[in-house]
Amino acid sequence: MSFCILADSPRTRSRLDALASSLKTYGPRLILQAKATNRAHLQTLLALFKEDAEKEYRELAEECDEFLDEIRKNLNSGNVTQTEVSELEAAIDGLERWFSRIKARDIAGSGGDLRVRRLLTRCHDTLLSFSDKAQPKRIGEAPTRRMRKSG
Image 1 (cartoon, rainbow, N blue to C red):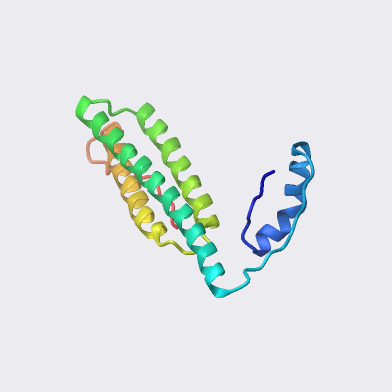
Image 2 (image 1 turned 30 degrees about the vertical axis):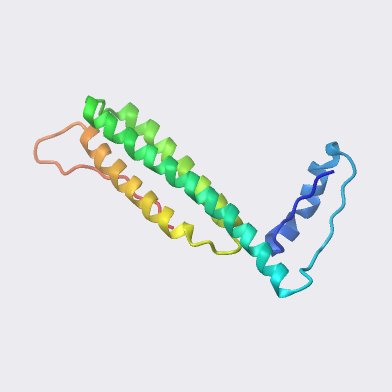
């Protein structure tokens, strides 16, 4: 027997039918609405959600550090090409999607989003600098810059 606890939000409620349909293959399913019996139980539940979000933010921060290390390795080895830029752009897009998913589940407001947002900004800035170095240089022309995502 398994249980899944989801935060009560308009988004979650709007997706319950789809979730129930996807669980059909796992056997019987029930959707219940639960409420903490007292403030201490609610605080415990929120602490569990917060701990889970903080763990995910830490994992994402590690991936951001690896992304920055990858750029440093490419710079040190002279592997500064448009192909590398494209690969790094795909990687940073994945990091941004992961960040969005964690933030959407962070109902307890763990605070890890601010730290990771700063790291992602650093990743974008470092990639932008790397991308400028990979651009073919033309006399008298300023480097082109890719717009950074806001968020």
